[in-house]
Amino acid sequence: MDHFPIVEELRYQDPLTCFIRVPREGALWLDSAATSQQGRYSYIAFSPFQTIISKNEAVNPWTVLEAVFARYKLTPLSDLPPFQGGIAGVFSYELGGYLEKLPRSTIDDLQFPELMVGCYDLVLAFDHPLQRCWLFSSGFPETSEEARLTRAKKRLAYAKDLLSQTVTLPEVCAVTIAEEAITSTFTQARYEEEVARVIEYIRAGDIFEANISQRFSCTLPDKLSTFDLYRRLRKNNPAPYAAYMQLGDNVIASASPEQFLQLENGMVETRPIKGTRPRHATPEQDKRNAQELMDSEKDHAENVMIVDLMRNDLSRVCLAHSIQVSQLCALESFATVHHLVSVVQGKIKPEFNALDLLKATFPGGSITGAPKIRAMEIIAECEPTLRGPYCGSIGYLGFNDNVALSITIRTYAIHQNFLTFQTGGAVTIDSVPKEEYEETLAKAKALRYTLVGERNKHIIT
Image: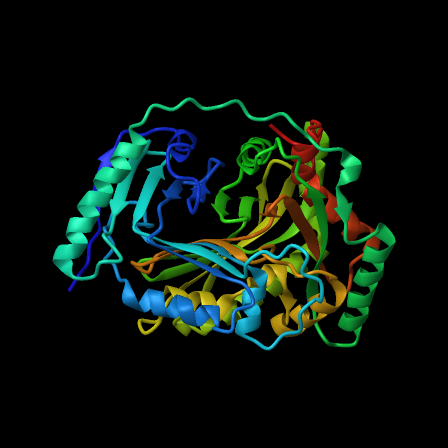
């Protein structure tokens, strides 16, 4: 039997004013804060009927996801935003350790869950170009049709009542932290040593490329709420795959520019980023930086290696003849950096679903290296702490088999009041350690300046 969600179109509003009306605990805002085709939809999923938080559990978290995904199925409503209910939240990098036997860095001071997701029967969807908004209600966890539809109607009325409340948007807190309060897992010299070590692995034939990152951390002041911090971040660094979620002691606040996976109507798309140059406030210099990136053989080589890796990963679940590269090394510009972005597409085999796709490709190749498993082993050697959410994924696995997931970069991960953010870059045979270090600082600009409150002259507005 087909299970359709019930849906009602509501008056279009700013998603921010809608998000402050719903219960914050367990709510997920997938916030397309940039104007682009990739940033067409935003979603607010709230009041989950089940939450899954996994941290060093004896039960494989992928097995838990499989059980949920097998129980709840929706038939997609066409010509509407594709997320109409499902599993959504944060899939941390270390989830890959349940798919492959991998070493782990020894320090886990952040203590962020490996899996932090909700199972959502209520989703508010925004189509920004069309200025339209819909509320979906599936009625899950009820699965008998009569009980499901009865619950769906009650939940729809509950959600409409929440969203009709009069609220005042508070001013964003201006509290900042001192620059010197932000510490790193690496000195410049130590980071450059690790880059040199990776280059030696490449020369020895172990790998072609590995993504090595440094992690920054600080303690959040009591007066600065995580949501105010996110509001500042989305203003400083608007991004097509931004997100905010709070569940228990854990918060994610992301301004990711990178799509990991999209699945709609059986078609898969991944958009790996490799190649970076900083933006500049002077238009002439900004243009020179962009041209330098487009002309760089090293950056093109980085990108092409990851494209090949993603083609290989997609071949596990996609029809072989369907996999194609529709865009190779195109320039895309964001608030603080220019990137090279490629697009790989394929048609999923009929015997596979959204979760199979994620398992076949997780974590994304653009933030591991090639070949993936050996690169991840070397990452564990070089980086002293677990990555946590960084380089994992944020987004949804729809019960209708639609998927949209980002790569978790340009992101704050917060446990209690301990905040971290990480930036890295691809190390290849042609890497210069000092330049690799400087690239991590360029990528960290918006995150750092959002905390310290200084205007970043390299942020383009």
